[in-house]
Length: 110
Length: 121
Image (cartoon, rainbow over all chains, first blue to last red; front, top):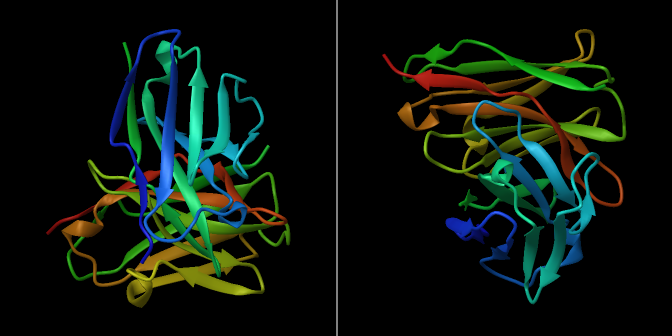
């Protein structure tokens, strides 16, 4: 089964820029994987940030952006805020109704 | 405004069946523009997709859980449900329901708050 890999943790200074990535264990990333990104904060419903690689969900600040970097999906936070300290997950569509989440990245802002 | 709310027992005994319901408000579960899914997060671990149901189409499951999962829809109550059989402590997790947008691309566009289910005797 395909595994989706994310950096386990990352740290960024307030106001800094950080790029989190998401890679498939086998095969090349394709637009048909429709990579999307979610923010998970304890006690809250997961928040959809980015879908279809680079489309921001409604009410998501433009400091969050999505892209493809090489063979990886990427989430970039430009001008990180203390409230951005959270866990971030990507998910890939594998086709045939199957989804695979990445292991998540714990982002620290300090 | 769409809302999803999980409900069900917070404690299940090992070997028994975990049953959860997701109540959808502010939208119809019969919409052909969306389908519905279950995702979980065990303590200290990442998110795991469990399965999805398309109204009037069918169901799809995580291969690692497929033999133990049943997902169904009750259109009269605008709800969908998850049953996970033969549970063990490894099934202890926060369980989320979500709506999945269909179309040219798909993504999880709305989520419930999640409900913690513990498996313990």
